[in-house]
Length: 289
Image (cartoon, rainbow, N blue to C red; front, top):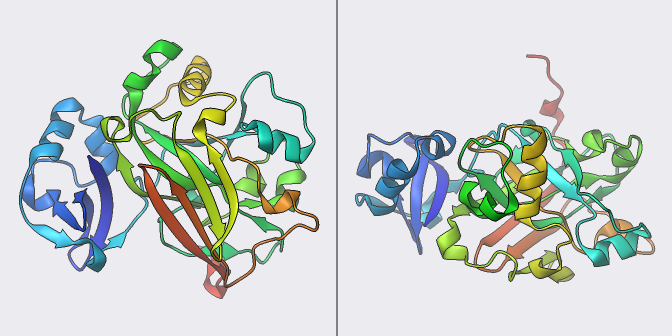
């Protein structure tokens, strides 16, 4: 099942994508939550209903796809989790996962623009496989971690490199608004199969920059769940991004930073494609509510 969050003239809600159409779950199963985080929290019976409900079908091309989880409770990501990326940065292989967070306000849709920030010109891409937590959990052993994964999606862990390097926590450089596009759908595990056998590709203006397989992850998603849930509770709707392979702009000589007009496309086999154009940060982002 491929679950999407979409917007049309009647508002924002959840649907089930089937090829070039979307089943409008608000009409097909009005008893279900209209928000994907709430739908996941409602449990297996609600998800079963979402998978089988039939009703009005809308043309995918006429809808605006939002981030599947518009405002994740947590966005957690992993640094240096592919051996080739570790090598291109000249670092040592990590002995434990290097975890950082991206603020929830960095979340944006799978086809929305990425802002080239006023504060820096060192803007980079990081194509990644991500997943969403489906069940509240703590102290999850690796061999049960698959039970708490609601589904998989594509992430671009957009990074402002000079801001990232100013602090060992990396939070500032990873959290600019619009710097976490993800989607296009939440794809359930039964449809993806083995998450450690997926090809991942990042293109900038059609040029291949990153090409890898998730089998090369140093810490796989199940290890990450075990590690993270040792410290804190994971909740439905939390987004975890698993790290990026070699080929980032930072490692090029000279670095090939993103600039306005660039189009970044990230593809993950059996999961989907996101594509985002870089635009200059709009003037109206300066505001006090």
